Length: 384
Image 1 (tube, rainbow, N blue to C red):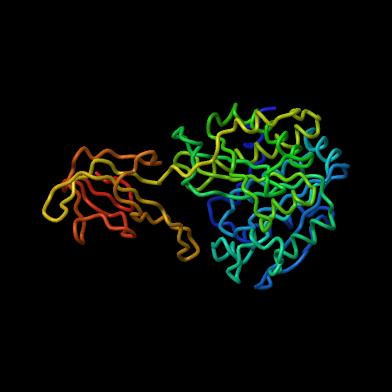
Image 2: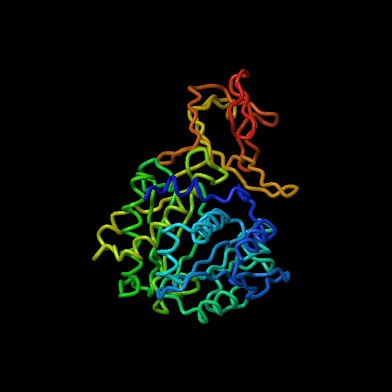
């Protein structure tokens, strides 16, 4: 099976970029609702509909949800691409629909999606509300989980551009986790199923995404939904969609999430599970905070009358302006950046820093400046 060709064939072109809202996906859900598979399973704080979509007649029950955090829409795009596979007449769709019953919530947090915030409208992180269930969205997720009684859960998220694959200098384009079920981070039967499946997914994806797959930290927090569901005895997989080179709209990453989803169910349907995959799983390099969006090295600055050479880093803030996500670069670190990498890395070779303020890179200042008067940097990028 060529996963690249499969993605190209079934990619849903009408949604793209980073700003994925309920208005973006409602027409797609209606289009897929061929046999009353679509239900409104609850309402958000601001009374927006939360939908579930169920398809398949198989014995193995798969529960997937995306955009628990409203500003994390990459996996939502990939989930729709996958749903289009399931709604095709392909042999793969027939195989999957005979083996599995899928239930998905494509957007758990429609208010956060519209506001482009991690939290919901009450400023609560739903991924820290799995025990107290203070929010309507958290209650919806738990109710669907209990009513559907899944055999596997897929918890779909985005992660920031700061994450790399250990110290390799490669961005963590995808990261996976089999969440812990207890403080001791022990491995029981449920967690082992998730570990073995992730080991299998990684084996497949290394062909397409070599050295850019990480393993997320497994510290236990019962307030996180993945840890809760794992604790309740259901094998749970966390997907984290990260950065691919020059792909701030996450369209390349979307492709790899799609590949991971298809691989997951191909492995399960063919009973091609890696046995005792613990070592393979643990050999996936750890996700690590090692990246900035921009690093500028060997910059000359005047500091108290003395010329010194320093480095500094800038990071994009994703800001919602007039229904568009704008990437605005701000200086966030000055000094020793040893052991850090930049998605854009520039060696100024002693060029003199100047800006329209104090000719000194200050924290939280926009990354607009000059180097030796002839190089202009606008919003982090070099304009010569």
